[in-house]
Structure formats: structure tokens, C-alpha cells
Length: 414
Image (tube, rainbow, N blue to C red):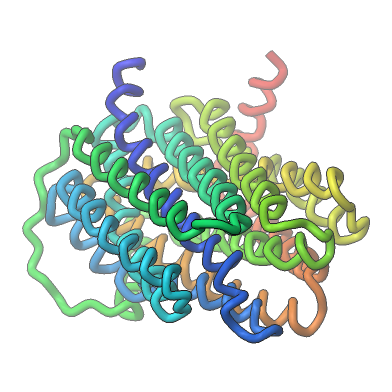
């Protein structure tokens, strides 16, 4: 077990550093670039940063899945991490010139890089650790993802409050993280299945969704439901992340650094919940964690809307919501790892990514309308309603739910 963990560590580190870069850039745009535009357009900048990040996933996920099936994934990861260095150089120039066009272009390129990285990293979990490590490996990937969100967001808040030589600190941080990411990628070692020889066919995201939906319905019953569940989760997470950028400073009166701390606490709480979920499941897929985690999430989110807690109480409430959200997300990822066999897993992940990011793009539109027409507090009500629908749907539709709940309760009774 220790040996497998050591083998997986370079992948975990590479993932962490990549997520750190993504969120450092996105958060710096949200904290700094909003002051480059006229007052009243702050929400538009946040929406655009989200949209520029997710559009590549929507348009190019089919190609990402195709690449992971037909090339060695470890080599793909090294190439992508090399490109990341040049993307961050573009971002540095954008912050130096205070150009919203350049920094958003860098955001788009990071979204493009992440599109091709995602199916490769998740498929490599099984190639390195084996199927027995799917749950704990996926949980750890999720944990490192949200720790990357945590630290990236936290550092962005601190950097945005620096008054002297801020661009030097920003540039130095970007370069340190990207070069470290390339080094860790070079250390990934995996025993991969032989790449498939597939004749290239014209792909677009509409045809890809239609084909993969039909394929999932026939070949992997339940996959479409799991993809929908994961997509609703990411819609919720995106709404919360964008809303914190408005709610914390305007409603709660927090500084950028304090807002970054709250967002970081949310990220680490989701990561902790994901990892704890993997520990409870062990070598199994425990879908019973979905309604159990969902109940905690709903209580926390509705408490925020109805009670409008301030300061520490808000931090505690949003952290509880994030932790329980992590509990109900990991079983869905682990289900996909176990049920989708062989090289087809890369296609399944690419399909999942595309639907996920369509929902994230929709979340940007929902956020813009809700925050503009009502308030940031009202956004939490919308989050609660979406979560309620998600939990009820998955609880009623996923097979083996009652048996899994009984299995989990036995674990806690020991």
C-alpha cells in the first residue's frame, strides 16, 4: 500500500501545482482586474473569468478524450506542463500592462491546458495504483485539487493586497509553481494500456454529447445519471465560489485577504470531505454517502440564507457545507472509475468534463442574473434548491443506495 502511495505522489503533486496555477490566475483576475474596469462591472469580470476558463472544456473535451486514448498519457502531461510555463509568461505581461484582454487570454489558455490534462490525470490513477486504489486514489486527487484551490486562492488574496513591487511577487510565484509542476510531471511513472489505434473522425461537442449519451445508456447503465450529479455539484461549487467574491467584501465587509481565506477554507473543506469519503469507502464505492453528505450540505446552506450569519459563524457554516459537499462528490467519481473499463475511461471522463463545464458556464449566467437582480444572499437560496434536487434525484435513482447506506452506518457503529 505504501509503495502504491509513493508511486502516485508525483501525479498528486503535479495535479496540485496545476490547480494552484489555475486558481491563482483566476483569483488574481477577480481581486485585481476588477479595478481596471468601470464601477458596476465587477460581476462581469468575474463571470468572464469563469467563462474563459470553461469554454475550452465545452468545445474541446472530445479531443482531450481522444488524445488520452491514442497517446501515452504521461507524455501528454509533460507536454502540457511545458506549455503552462509560456501561458504564465503571458499572464505576467497582462498584469504588468494592466490589460484585461491579455489576462483573460491567459485564462483561456489555462482552460485549454486543463481540458487536455483532466482525462489524463484521472485515468493515470488507475494505471499507477490499480483498480483497488480507485476510490482512495480519486479521493486523494480531489483532495489535492481542493488544496490547490485553497492555497492558490489564499496566495492571490495576499498578493492582491501588496502595494509595492506586486508584479515581481506575482511573476515569481507563477514561474516557481509552473517550473515545479513540470519537474513533478517528469517523475510520473505509469504502466499504461497500449494506446488505441483510432481513425480520426470529425468531432464537435454537440455530436460528442449525443454519441456519448447513447453509448453510456447502452454500455454503462447509470453513467448518465452520475455525470448529471457531478455536473450539478460543479454548478453549485461554481455559484458559491463566484458569490463569495461579492458576498464577503460587500455584505460581510471582508478585505481581499480575508475573502481569500474564506475561499481557501471552503476549498480545503471540500478536499477534506472528499478524502474522508475515500477513507470510509476503502476499496468499495459507497454511494450511500451521497444522501448522508447531502443532508449536511442542505442544512448548512439554508442556515446561511435564513440566518445570514456574520464573521466566524459564516465561516463555520460555509465550511460545513463544503465538507459535506465533498462527502457526496467522491462516490460519483469513484463509481465512474470502477464501472467504465479500459481505455474507454478517458472518453467517459472527457464526456463528464464537458457536461460539468456546460453547467459551470450556466452557473455564471445564473450568478450574474441573481446577484444583479436580487442579492448575494439570494444566490445561496438558489444553491440550496439545486442541491436539494440533486440529492433527491441521486438517492432515488442510483442502484444499491439502501445497501450502501446500511454498510456505511455499520462502519460508524464500530
